[in-house]
Length: 282
Length: 281
Image (tube, rainbow over all chains, first blue to last red; front, side, top):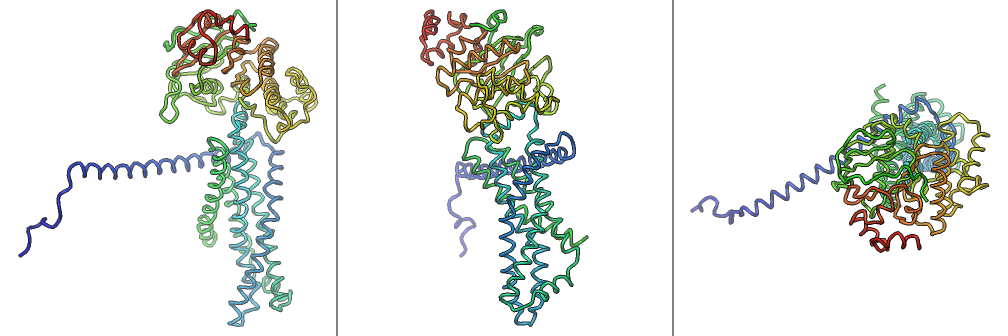
């Protein structure tokens, strides 16, 4: 004999319990909404600053001395870190490719695989990640400490735009130097592969370089370098925005610096996918 | 010592409305200004008129919005409600670009000096000149040397900010503030963290600069001794409003009970004996 319906469902929750359960949900929705709103405000503010920066890049006054200083700081001083990364990546890539292709007798394609991987993907992305870590965090720390010590307010109070004086030179310098660093990294990565090909794989330099030269298209180089213009813009804008948004003291600068590294890395990796799709479609 | 005794005026009722048309000599005016941070009211209907040429000291307990009030004048902070009028122009809703011409006529001395770390003293003091004038590097160097002499720091052009003491930093920052000979100088706690002798020097500099370049000075401070020394008028900010505006002697005669309480909290006995006590200090 079946029991009447509802007999096994236990006691009905009281009106108070229902009220508190709903309150919990409401709190969850409220917290979710607040976080969403904060994220939208953060992204909106960054987009607005990016727009102002683009405007400042093409209108007077220009701060050429500051730009030169940033070209040195962002570009020249990043050569070693990006060069070492690319050279070791090229060596590892050559070893791994040779190991994988040996079973098919495709060792002669090592140069081509190394070059294509570096030129189209690894060179731009690894260079952007390294620059994002070194330069992005440096920009945030510098501008953030200027905010904390009221130097940015001092600029504003003297009728000098922080966007023009601080942000625009850093964005322009990163956009110019990242493709240059990437080109250098591509070259060093290929040379790293060459070293392994000659020393470890018993190939001749002529075979290695010939396989690259014969198959390489200009689009392979350009698609990789073009992406770094966007990566550079992303890294510098994120770095500057997080620096300008610092509130509080030294700990806030540290938090903002970490946020820049994380966000710049994620943005580079995600935008790489869409940019790759775009350049393949062109 | 009063820089401009003629500028002293009578007490303005706290929280009064916008009132009659501004005095022709009024250079800065706050009309019913409200400001909240994270839902907390900092300014709750501030009304204030600042006269051309005077030195006004803004006193008040920590966290009452003295610096916030100061930052409204040059637009670094904007009010939630009300109007701030500077040089006859309402700056409440002006954009950063629209504020630029007004900011060129103003200068601000920040609490920590806010010198640019990457520049030496000469570049710091010459910064506004390079930005806003067509002077040659030689002319700029001459002006920088003159301003540094005015603040008692000749020959420090090559020093970096990190090589300067707190008092020297503030004096260099003051030299930078007066480089363009502004019409209004805003001082944000100019003597905080300094020893009494250096504080006294800064006080004398404020009066000296006020007289030499005919500027209007608004000084946010906790330093009652300096306020007595330099001010033409005091404005006491408490609970989001100016509870007292008047001369130091009016204040010392028992200007407002909350102000008396503030004096007592700062270590000064209140009442009729206050003036003598402060003089004795």
